[in-house]
Length: 322
Image (cartoon, rainbow, N blue to C red; front, top):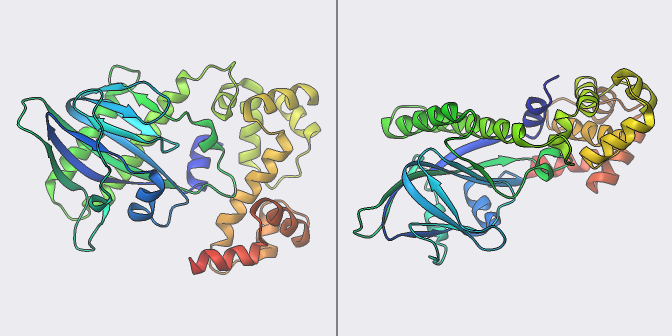
C-alpha cells in the first residue's frame, strides 16, 4: 500500500487555479482569512489550502504572524496548509486591505480569473494562485503533519517536474480550450503532490510527525499494513510481529512519529474510510461497519459518535442535506 496516495484519495483532495496575475511594481495583494476565501471558492470543502506559483519575475511574501518575509523567484511554489494570513508584494513592508469581491465567481465566468495589478514600474511578476480543498474530519493525518508554510524553490530537488507542471498550467490557462478548468484542477493537484513529495524527502526521520513516520523503517511498515488491510483484526502484538519488533518498541516509535498509539490510529483511519463509504448510495450502516473492521453495528456507531459527535446515520443525513 502506497500510504500517501491512500490518504489523498480518502481525504478527497481537489484543486483549482483561480487567478492568473500579472503585476508591475509597485503592487501588493492582501489575502483575506482562508475561512472567508474558502466559503467563496470551495464552499463544499471542510478545509482549504492556498498556493501560489511564480511564473516569471520575483515577489515577496509578507506574513501577518510568525515567519519572516520570504522572496519568491520564477519557478518557486508556495503552499500554505494552515491558511496563515499573508500578502504578496513587489517589495518588503507593503500591506493593504483584502478585497473579497475578486473571489466572487459568476456562473458564466471561467477560471482562472486574469488580473492586472500595480503601477507603472518595470519590475514584472507573473504568478498563479489557487486552492486545494480536502476533508478535515473524521481523520486527516496529513493536515497536522504539514508545516504552516512550504516553500518549494526552483533549484530544489525535482524542481524540473514542478516547472513543467507550472508551464503546462500556464499554457492551458491561455489556450481557452474546452475542459480547461478540469485540466487546470488536475494540474494543480499534481503540483501539490509533487511539492509534498519533495517536502517529504527533506523531513528528518528523527523528528516526530506523521511524515517522518512514513520514512521510519518499522513505523512506515506498520502504516502500510494498516492502510492495506484496515479491516483486519489487528492488535498491537500482531502488528509488532508483522513488522519485526517488540510491541513496546512499536508503540513507542509509532506514538513518537504519528502522535497516536497504533490502535488509536487504526481506529481513526477506519472511521475516515467509513465516512466516505457512508456517502455512497445504497450503503447502510451495518455494511459500512463490517467493511471497515467492526464486529457489530453498535460498536461502530459508538466509536463514530465518540469521534464525530453524532451517530453515523445522522451524520450521513446532515452531509446529504449540506
